[in-house]
Amino acid sequence: MAFQRTAAVAILCAACTQGPPGRKLASGIARGLIAREGAAAFLLNAAHPDDRAVPEDLLAGDLWLDDRKVGTGVSSQDGSYAFSPAAPDLAFLAAWRFREGEGELRVVSGRGEPRQVAKGARSFAWSSRGELAYVAEGRVGVAGRTVRLPAVQAVAWSPDGTRLAARASAAAGGKLWLVDKMQRVRSTGQQFVPSDPRYNPGDSAMLTIHCCVKVLRR
Image (cartoon, rainbow, N blue to C red; front, top):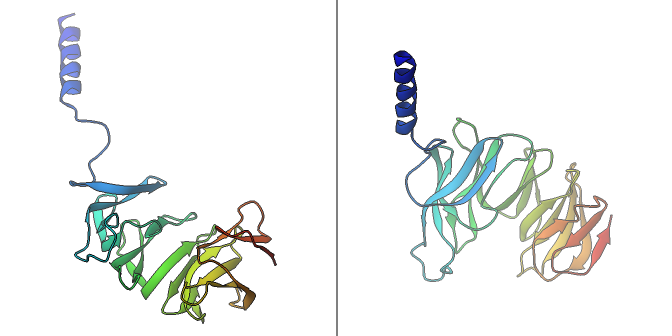
């Protein structure tokens, strides 16, 4: 009986000395946490850049993947970093330059080192199949190939991952193109109030433009 009491006390004391559940990833102020399949990405100690032209609510900081820093100068804007839906890959825009609206597109997997995909990248998008498309220096890139589109600024995948919608900048009138996997480009012949292109998630045969009523059928 005495041994049982001693064992019980020892177990209780061990429980009392245990720390909180989980593990510590970093010290500092974290924001913008995203997670996928047990991996977590977040900005640490983000601060406003030394530029009065940048809105006060926009910040930039170090990007962490789990317990290690993988990038610097990553913006707090939506879409600055994202996990692939099909693989444990994290894409992000490092060294973001707010005035130019561009940075360095990089991808990191697990414990590997980040690799650079493109310089001067404005935006990127993952397909449902885990393919990465991006806009950089007036070109749309995917699967190691690029196609030039004048003043292109943003892209979005169709739900089935076979086509891209690409939009020109506001200064260029927001022209819209459709790009297939073979890099064939078709202009819609339409111009819209500039906004990010978005596919209707319920119908891969329809393309809708956010904030616009116009619907285009392929």
